[in-house]
Amino acid sequence: MNSAFKIALAGAMSVASLSCVAMAQTTTAPMVDTTTTTNSTTMNDKVSVVMMSALEGENGNAKFAEIEALSKSETAVAEAQSTLQSDATLSAALTAQNVQLENVVHIETAADGGKVVYVK
Image (cartoon, rainbow, N blue to C red; front, top):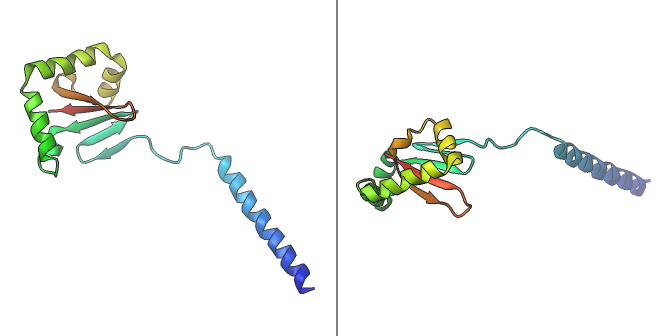
């Protein structure tokens, strides 16, 4: 009788665990928010916006120096503005995040194909 009870209990536990998995698979609500904001960095739809002021005080002093130099280069800023003018999707994503497009100083393409936009 003890063996029959153990088999029945094991069967009930395996059925219970399978029903939980089935419930988890039928959910339709997203589990993760797609918009993240940290300090002066905003990320949405593979577009990350980094404020230069966020780089200045952190361990990103080298990155800050690089972006600051680019922000003073008319050629680099013109290239960033040209990229914005030719990429309507990027411009729309930045406008949706309340970024003033004239303040964009540099745009990098991330490893995943997204864009990192540096704003003064």
